[in-house]
Image (spheres, rainbow, N blue to C red):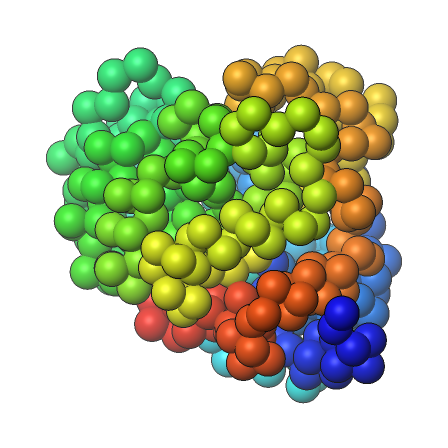
Length: 335
């Protein structure tokens, strides 16, 4: 049994970074007050794939919300993220989950950086001009344009996310990039059957050897280990974290919960029809059971801290998993 006062102290002292929360145009400025109150110092909110015009509209909406939020600040530098806790703010790291809006114009990478984007994924599940996503039957890897994009992203100091990229594309990016890259939200395929959306031990170790960090998701299907007959729990979530720690060491593991805080039950039904393929071979969970048992929303975050400590992690290693590892990664990549 972990002492409750110890859990509170470790949680309050940590700089907590969640490197994946789903963007929604219905996001409310008041949500950032909730994040601050539960101890979150920074989130990465990633905008799903879309064309250039629609992407610009979504960015405009997000920035309008941030302008209204007393407790949020756009994270355009490492110092912003590092100092957010001290300043009583939640640093919002903006990412784009596909290179579709860049079309074939690498010059747009600089433009998006000027607009505040600091994380980019080159392929989201399908093939595009730059590389191949994880749901394509044949992964052709990075294109020549993709190679050039990796080098430009390195030059601009933008973190490359490979969570939805195909295996060969991930390896090509690792070989091409001079900087570490990230699985901002993933799960290990050695324990969880999720097709190519889950990541093999080989890929996880290769990414860690490059200096990258792996964020563990908390969605039920991404924590449901093979042959499980019951809904996974926070204990199972931390067990997956521990598997990656065993592979890579504690310095390469973090939170990439992939929560969708503004999904209503009605919107979820519509979304699930479109995104259900990402859950295969698992059944798409109900709205009420989309996350592991014991975690309903971000206000349950202290339960994760408690469970990590109960698994025997030291206070310093717990702080690394809660956010310090992401801070170290950003300090290396962002310019």
